[in-house]
Image 1 (tube, rainbow, N blue to C red):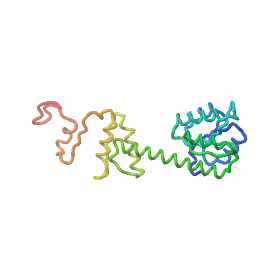
Image 2 (image 1 turned 90 degrees about the horizontal axis):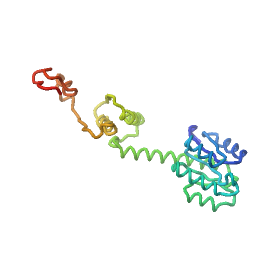
Image 3 (image 1 turned 90 degrees about the vertical axis):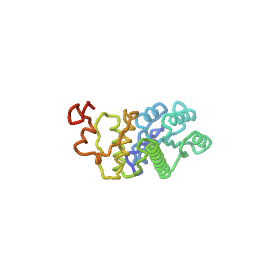
Image 4 (image 1 turned 45 degrees about the horizontal axis):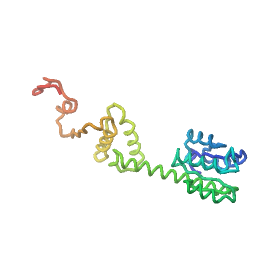
Length: 231
């Protein structure tokens, strides 16, 4: 594991195996649950990217009914979560069924910790990739889609624009020619409550200094020659 902030949910009713798995997977932030209800509570609270779960859970640990019920609930509540199912050595049929329902992978007990770690790491990477693809797709379909960048600083500016859009504040975008100021301004407008109003682009450099203030903010009647009404 390479990211200490990644959260893994371990659903296992055997305390000894819980402890063993937490020890083996100490490179990520692990939370545990011993039954279906506590697993759902942990899922809602911690929103783990990856879940490992035993199909045999209380109140009938020798049956897979509760495990399949939990799997369905996890994939309904958090469909992007990667679920790795742990089964008995000779229970391949249920493992394959779990994968068919949407589980990411399965392991038979007893398992090699190193192989499980590799599979979990791969699940985290797949989850991260899917989240990034979803973010980029949303960005391409959104008001800032005209801005093509992977630069961290520019992406940070985009996030700031998205946060400011809902606020009734004055925003000044400063930058050299060609850095995307108008695209950002149009995106800010499109994301704001004023999105249904007109977006007016003005070339300030083409307006004489003496008239710039009145062009932007209006003027009072009689403020200067020709000002015959308030604007």
